[in-house]
Image (cartoon, protein in one colour):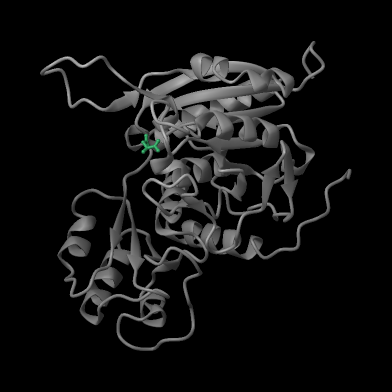
Length: 349
Ligand code: ASP
């Protein structure tokens, strides 16, 4: 608790639409349009309602479109969040571009511990009528300091909905309600400034041990109608140290691509995810060439409930922590087993 009697919350800004404004028109000067130009201090100063909720510390961390962020940036952010928790911050709120929140929030979920972390952004930039950034920032801080957020890992809060980072995905290019948890639903919502958390989540197991140094390159390929295996065949020779295949439906690829995936799986870990935005990979239903049973028998690792982008985050961080294929498989299995474990009730209600 800070001197004000309010909890101390650290707000990190990383750029994105929430921080994007236009530059004065200058002929020949760049592509025009809005770009990330505001930092954490400006974002926080623009929302006076925060003053009654928390003592906010602002940390400008990056100022980029979120497609320019890397897993290395997230590893550095997680370390900084840990330092802020150690020096008295009760919670962390991260503002960034929405394009990659489903990956960065999940990476933070795997890498941080010690307090609530809430990631938010905006779909409508500050130059538009009805920008959603200020409301999302207020809701994120309200959730971060709420008792309900304790023990839920990293959360994604936009449009007054609370999503677990492990499930949240961006499902629309421009709508303020772009974020959904298609497999599980949101864990709660915010009404009249009060976070309502209606689902408890078990702690994720299978997280990577200490991650340091460079993050190995992991490719994410998506199956498509009539696909051939040229990209799959090339992956290991291009230097990728892992592959995630976003297969059709329950985990299927064209039959003639299956052998290529099996060959790659003999060299580097290959994870079988789905290009469908919700649901789990199947494991024991279909038996045709290129089916999930065929691919798993060829050594692919089932992603389970993790989407392709989230599976790529987990595999990248596991490899960065020194895992080989069998340790990566064990971690995916443990994480999938842990999502259906019954969570223990919070110590205090
Ligand atoms: N359209 C993006 C956003 O919503 C831009 C980005 O991800 O940086 O923030």
